Length: 319
Image (cartoon, rainbow, N blue to C red; front, side, top):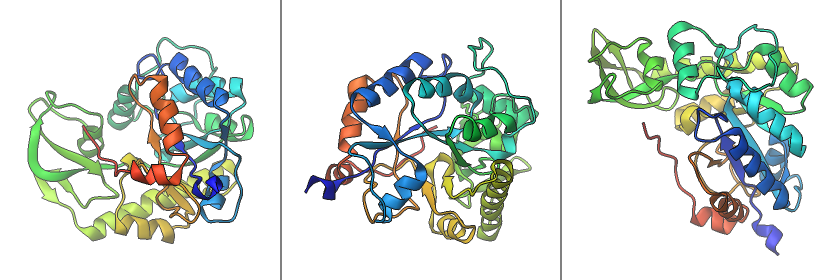
């Protein structure tokens, strides 16, 4: 009877580093919690089959995901996954791929934090804070993980024309996706995914509303180009997409379907049960210095579809 209420918890990480709020040792404790709790990591494909009502999953399944393919994932997360024999799902920003030869997986004191890695990529076109093509290839073909799309450029946009402050008093890497280089005193606004909002671009220091046709064109580019790049690099289908910042709307979902993706991952919370919509795969976003009890409780809640829906919520981006 309980199997009728089964839901698969999906946990989401971005950065694993001493410069982030989850260190390598924190991550090791999280993976030990999964192992001691009897959880079995499964693939995105197996999750998809289960949600479509076709496949079976282990008694206590879980999916481990990483957004953006930061270099610290290669240095810190992958060796820990290997320790426990766990496989994970990585989402790659293909426009940040580079041709640096595979780097060692040893501790690196010069490792960039997430915000630094994004700022360096967006402002200077220096993508060394992210995994290289060879590292992404090895992630799949040597380590047995999965890599899918997090878009081509992870584009952001201002959601409103009402200023929220000035740079650098109000500072976030997202702003550089919209304006590249900001000057002291430049106005900044509420931010969202450029795939989910028409939004505003800045022209002559003023916010200008963008049209829906322009957004549709950008959605198609971000989804098609990243899919094509990964399928060429990895020689396998790219069936899944991670919504940038977890945000989507009716237009972006329709283009997701047109461009041939089987499913997409959000930051919404809720049930990943049989016969639930694979365009909105729910995830538990792991961030901050949460106690292990927090993780254990969330895994329990989101393993049961009734509890998962009771505690479900839409993700809200906070900058």
